[in-house]
Length: 223
Image: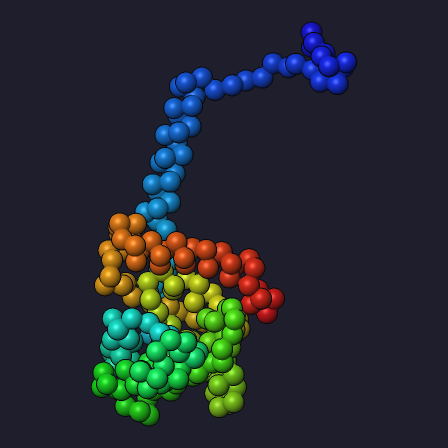
């Protein structure tokens, strides 16, 4: 029989509670889930799904290893053009000699042996947020202004940024375009043990939060 106390305002009831074995199983299960999540997080974010035709695109702010990969990819396959996206350089522009990452990335590709006729800078304007989406919109605008259409676009970018970039470029370019992506691992940390370096922690944790924001909260979701 239930016993009422405090003038009948509350009552005591029997409930099930874990034993020490139950708590141990729960802790071990959560620990195993955490380990699996940590190990699978980088491969999830660093999506690679290439399409070796159409338009090749590289984000102009990427590390040198990704820019080298973009140049090699363009030489290896039959792309019609290599576009370099990127907004204003917000630090060190006078020393670099370029105002946007699109121009800076283009100069790097020319140094890597590509022809000026093959490389097209696609600068985007400064925005407070959703910079990657702004780059994708700038690419879409350029394609419309040029009166050209590509059914496939292959995006090359840095490591864990790949999944978010592909999603936002797909939104900007529309369902009529198939957007592929290649993730280029950083040389600054081991992707299989990213949690062992500050650079890896910053990249993966930061991209996890940014991907969640882009997926659920960014204005791009309204497009």
